[in-house]
Amino acid sequence: MRLAARWNTILLTLNLLALGVVFYYTAEELLIPKAAEWLYKHDYKNLVFKCDSVMREHFIAKKQVLRSLSDDAIKNLRAAEVGLLACHDYDVLRKRLLSYGLSENDLSRIGLEAIEEGAKDVRTFVETHEIRY
Image 1 (cartoon, rainbow, N blue to C red):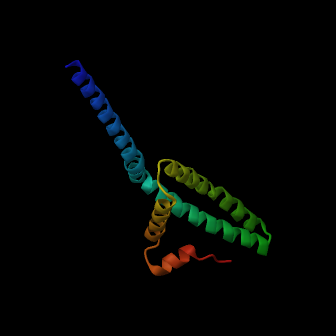
Image 2: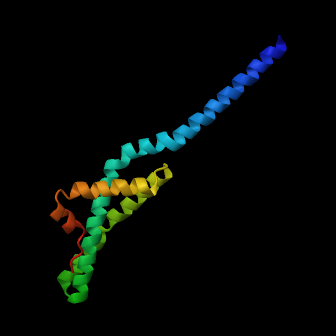
Image 3: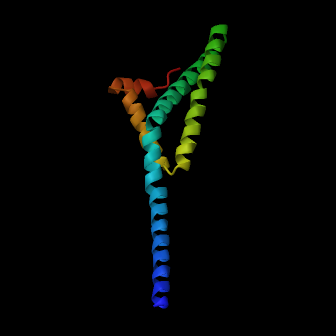
């Protein structure tokens, strides 16, 4: 009788341990990344679009300074450099999402969604990605 009770206790303990391992794996591989994507997707999309825009503006401002060194061109370049802070915020959120288990592919997909949502028609999409100098 005591032996059967011990075996029942051991089997119950092993079953609970196995359930804990399954729950941990499920949470780590499925629940946490999906929850993080749901919570931060909107913020990430906004930062992707802002960073893309300010990088383009910075590139254009830099080319203008190289073309003609003037006070206005330098002021525009300084303002564009301040705008690059959005890229820092984007990078911080990107690393946080990676630590929550989202993959590079997940983040790329969300980034493409952001750019597509920000550019409603084909011409706007081309203008968004076009680098002019």
